[in-house]
Amino acid sequence: MDLSWSEADSAFRDEVREFLAARLTPELQRAGRLMTSVYSDHEASMEWQRILHERGWAAPAWPVEHGGCDWTLTQHYIFSRESQLAGAPSLSPMGIRMVAHAIIKFGTPAQKEFFLPRILTGEVFFCQGYSEPEAGSDLAALTMAAAHDGDDLVCTGSKIWTTHATESNWMFALVRTSRSGKKQQGITFVLIDMATPGIQIRPLVMTSGEEVQNQVFFDEVRVPKTNVIGQIDDGWTVAKYLLEFERGGGATAPALQVMAEEVAAAAATQPGPAGGLLIDDPSFARKLADARIRTEVLEILEYRVLAALAGGGHPGAASSMLKVISTELSQALTELAMEAAGPRGRAYQPHATCPGGPIADFIVPEDGYLSGEPWQAVAPLRYFNDRAGSIYAGSNEIQRNILAKAELGL
Image (cartoon, rainbow, N blue to C red):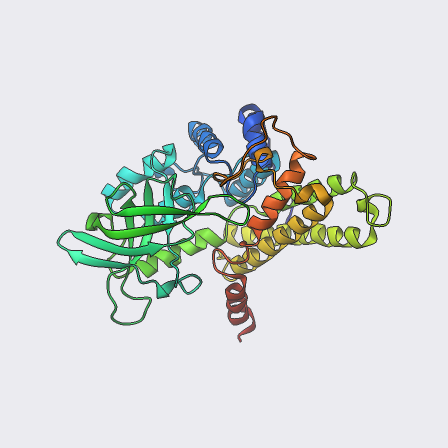
């Protein structure tokens, strides 16, 4: 595996850097740097998507005929890496990175014509309706009913952990249209207009205080069967296809490398437990060195997956490995950030951050007072949000089971 960029790739990297330097404003960069979870401030995210769309780079992984870029896999990786290194805010993955691929592969011409251009512009903003109170990691146990009534499906039930449901005007959801056969059968993938009568959204306050996740209730909500993606009762096929886009792709290591450097810089200014600076404390230095080494390992693994894809292969179980390593490494780094933040990191000061959703019941000081630096205010929110990293997109226990079967034959 050759780790050096080709001359063409180096030229493309320079082009991306020039674009980021010219269009990534200080305000957008601040929104990216002060993110408290994997989701950036909604307004900043939509503004950055508008700028990328103007350049034709909002959805580079889409087919060219639908607005994507004719990039090599290496160029996709370079774009993702440089964007993270520059501190660009993240785009919501629900539309561009997830449901759009299902629409492209399984959708009708009319569905593609309506949704794809509007996803690019942000006119259509999706949330994901998968998990239910009794169906999380075992998603096939979902029970939200969709009864046939002429040209409609009448949906009754609820979805939970629905990210940005209050900001979304559409949801892609899995519903139960039949109870015969295996539990993976009888599931249908549908697109639901969030303005349809019978939908109620109840925000869930996270331990970070943010209202990013929600529970959504459906009381006899009528969904036209023309909104079904793929075939009725065969939505599990669509859902499995989307999991490849949820668990893998892009560059994760650069953002974690930036986080590790931020922790190191902070620790170089904070007192240690036995005098001196925290960065010189043997226990802390050992944990930080371990995290830095693991970010390098993760980057090499991402390169290996990239090389496999470039050679016409498939990442296979490596996507599960990437998910486990990246989420657990992120958790380790947020723990180190909390240690470096010290007592000021215990203060709840979300007004100094750029969270991914509203903050519940927090009164901003009239003078905007902040104890410490913004990164010390970010640290506890990232810590709390990252506790979910090893659960979402398929828990890490499930990913280890996949690895055990695929790689070890257990």
